[in-house]
Picture 1 (tube, helix red, strand yellow):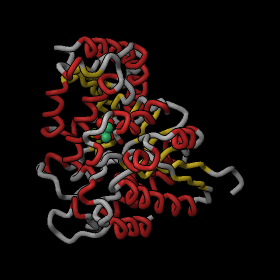
Picture 2 (cartoon, rainbow, N blue to C red):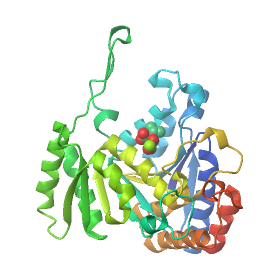
Picture 3 (cartoon, rainbow, N blue to C red):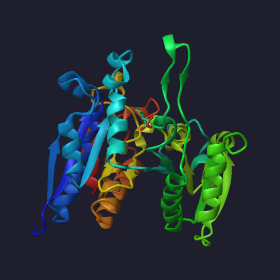
Picture 4 (cartoon, rainbow, N blue to C red):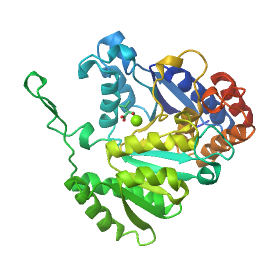
Length: 354
Ligand code: IPM
Ligand code: MG
């Protein structure tokens, strides 16, 4: 191990976050050991636990640690006790702030169906073979753009859907590049029949698409897309869309995978990549060993690929997860009432299959 260690910043967060991060790091350490890769981790507070300890959902110390790392692995944020708190004390504010601070504008959310994984209400003949990626714009639009807030006496409230050409263009490039390395089909999702932001979005995608003649670009309205994802999921390869549309569509797509607990994500664009499972903090099952660590473990595979440059190790993790699921090892969320293993058992099964 001659090169300097890879510095991984761990932000377990709230609810089941710590359990799934623990699982993912167990797998990452094992795969790193096997490949002779040096890994150095440090753990910091974000979300509700950070508000409890410091009064802030993203303490300065955490932000500096993240900025100084090679990559960040985040569990989940959110706890019901903060529901009525002002934005400055909401766990979610910490998550949005770190995405913005790291300039992670492109959020890749792969949606795949592992054959026979069960647990989805969608018929097998529709769902088997599903393999697409949602590229969600992550640092603009309704989540961030100004003006926002409440009017006098909360008589009204507003958020702003706004995109600059530059914001759309960089997201388009990430999406076209990704499609180029896959099945070369890109679906841009918008609401151009109603929204100006979507009309601009479409124009920019069409223009950038001229540089990617090998990629087939098509457009869908988001309402139609929500339907097509369930009716014909195999048709999709890469779906590129704005922040809120991507938030909604990726949860919907979780149904195809069997559970939201299955899905990983990578947020790219800045110097430091941010990796997190798509699922939330699930406070109702926290600390019980019931959480599905698959989304977090597959996030580590994405980290190996996109931030560490270890494609072979990434594929090794993905193969191990697939093998374990095909053997019928199931956490409760995907067991469909059948025999289920704990978070720890699932993790050990993946380690064993590496
Ligand atoms: C997600 C989550 C977050 C989002 C919440 C927790 C702020 O739903 O990552 O999809 O809306 O982006
Ligand atoms: Mg979401």
